Image (cartoon, rainbow, N blue to C red; front, side, top):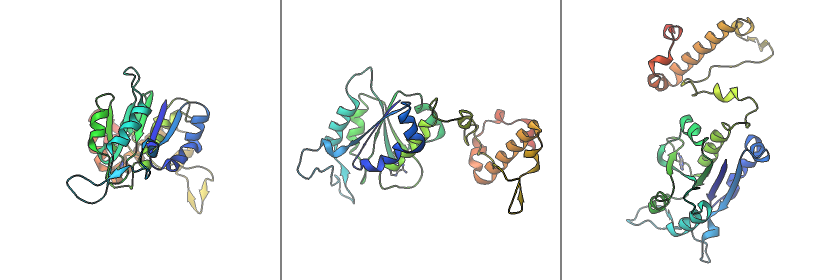
Amino acid sequence: MRIDVITIFPDYLNPLREALLGKAIQRERIAVGVHDLRDWTHDVHRAVDDSPYGGGPGMVMKPDVWGEALDEVCGSDPERMPLLVVPTPAGRPFTQRTAVRWSREPWLVFACGRYEGIDQRVIEDASRRMPVEEVSIGDYVLVGGEVAALTMIEAVVRLLPGVLGNPASAEQDSFSDGLLEGPCYTRPEVWRELPVPDVLRSGNHAAIARWRRDQALERTYRRRPDLLDALPERTLDAGDRAV
Ligand code: ADE
């Protein structure tokens, strides 16, 4: 997979080179390009923003600069256009389902806006040539799209084959079965007078699976009842319904 990010703060994306993502780059599972939006300005001030039509606070990112940047980064081969992602608090929610869908794409381009946002015509124009998704990572407002892009890239890249050490980890994630993951434990058996639950040391695999499922259901019920409401009835077994 290829991932490009366009931003006025390229250093914000440095964490991409660390840890799991850095390893994915080294192993050539992903190729990453980070581009400074100001490279496409032509004035001495390298201005990327201007005041909003209609008045109001803040500044709006200029369409001409973004237009040239996207033309160059995305190219013009209709057979080979990326999926353009525009992080914005006004977008559709980014979820695990979005991450799974994007993990099948060969090329993602993230357009990170700052200030009040990007002139809407940039999105309208890009949509004439490529799929564009405006997405939000949650109901809160960040200073810009960079941290949101990092979040989404991490969620997508860990799903790519050969990136996680143990692919079963991705399958057991919270959300992959619509439930939150339950608690987990490792040695020592008793720590600060707190024992590991007996069942996990019983060697009874069926009992362990049932216990884990019950813990996941209970935790989801307490913390995210909205997820339980959204669960299709057929995904619950008789044991689940007893919980
Ligand atoms: N930019 C600012 N806030 C954001 C959010 N919640 N999600 C995505 N992009 C953003």
